[in-house]
Length: 228
Image (cartoon, rainbow, N blue to C red):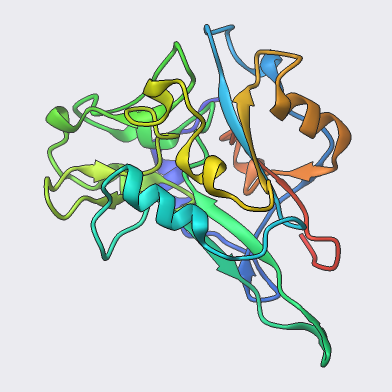
């Protein structure tokens, strides 16, 4: 399935709110894996366990420090729901909002200069900053609204799994390394023995707005007391 520019510019704002947090879409149990792609060398994805996440935002701070993200913009956000339950038994639902690194990325399809692209060696959706002309098409086309203009170089920016920093040094993305509860799992979806494939195998997971055909590679384990 391909994502037309018209469809995604129309659907970019569609969101369903539950318990005060933007979450969506279809519950799946391993409904996407390496068979979705044309066998690149690697196909990186991430899983966020909403039950393990405590909303400490260590991930967002680590991302900002490692990738030199200026104040006022963010590659990663942790959204918190309103209180669930009654005092003193109150809990909160935390969910990650960042680039989904879609198999079928609308941001890439609408870019007129080739600045937005999907790396076929890693599956990472990234930006050639030198090609970006600041038209904003990719920002409008992204159904997840996770792209922004970098205030210093005026090019489109977003999470790229620390491709130029930690990943280039053979490390895990900064958010994964900094998480104190191991709520984040990163790895190669093309490797059946990878940690992320093992986590998807044993958990019920969902993906935001998967009905749009984007095939996002950010999987989420739903909060046990919330709704999806």
